[in-house]
Image 1 (spheres, helix red, strand yellow):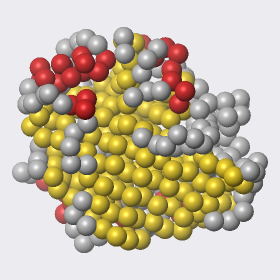
Image 2 (image 1 turned 30 degrees about the horizontal axis):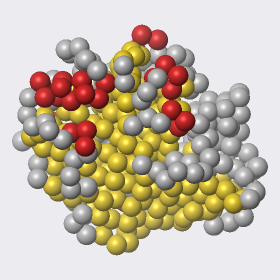
Image 3 (image 1 turned 60 degrees about the vertical axis):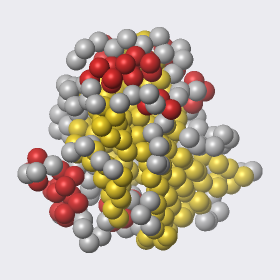
Image 4 (image 1 turned 120 degrees about the horizontal axis):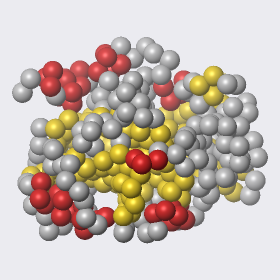
Amino acid sequence: MNTASDPYRELAELKRGSALFFAFEQARCLVAPDMGGRVFASLCGHSLHRIDLEAARRPDRPFNNFGGANFWPAPEGGRFGFNYRGDEWMVQPAINAEPFRVGAADARAADLQKPVALVNRAGTRVDARMQRQFRLVPAPPEALRGFCLAGFLSYQTTDRFAVTNRVSADAALLAAWTLEQFPGTDQTLSFGVVDRPREALNFDYYEHPGERIAYGPRGFTYRTDSQRKGQIGIRQAAGARMIGWYDLSRRLLCLRENASLPGGVYINIADNEQPGGPFSAADNYSIFNSDPDMGAFELETIGPMRVSGEWLEGSELISLTTFACFETRRDLVRCMDRLLGPVPAA
């Protein structure tokens, strides 16, 4: 295969001495400790994630947006945001440039961690242990059973912040947050499986996506073609089963499930001024669509913040990501019909 047409293969060659590699039948993935612990995957010859190979070759930018499946601190904006110094958007040095240390690792799992020092927009310093545990899952989820698959890949990430200094919850908020990036095309349609979808969605991030959102009997779709910047959230109280995307032209499906334990406090993670305050939204899923400059979209999961009395303890987020390549387009349509209701042809 020509590496120029296979970004995953080219990244794997580039990171051969530093990444952790995993394989399962027709699937390949890697975890890069020196790229924020990001996960990148390939299935049945398809490179799945957005990959910025130039950033991977020369990671010297103020923000190295490598792509893949990332792990960040939330909130992004608002008065407690971790991505602002005053009015200037920035990425914390501990997140952008400091590699994880690899602990236990084998052919199916790996444990990464590092100490981090984070400073929020209010000037409060939060010291924490940042940990990502990755493991392959050997069976597809129930939603895919009964369909003919050419291949699948499932993995679970458990992402934690454990605060190690004494920080009041009145001075800082902290939640674990994952952003899994994919190339946006006119064939990629994102979705959420949730009851009463019109009541479940939060549009407080940017302007309303308008006709890009369509509602069905068991959820919604969002046209994520990376042609118009926008973002939506799904309220934690709505009890969404999963979010995902599909591409009929490649017979590919992605599912992301937030499997975090109950309890804790969900906060507004939005990259804006959060005029209603840091608790004006409480989403556990989000979907972001970029403009053409970035050319990607993101499926995001958000964990709850945990406090003890008045003190910030940290956050834990458990996410399950599954990719499937279907033997036939018809089987993928049938799967989407089971999840959401009738799906129009692409």
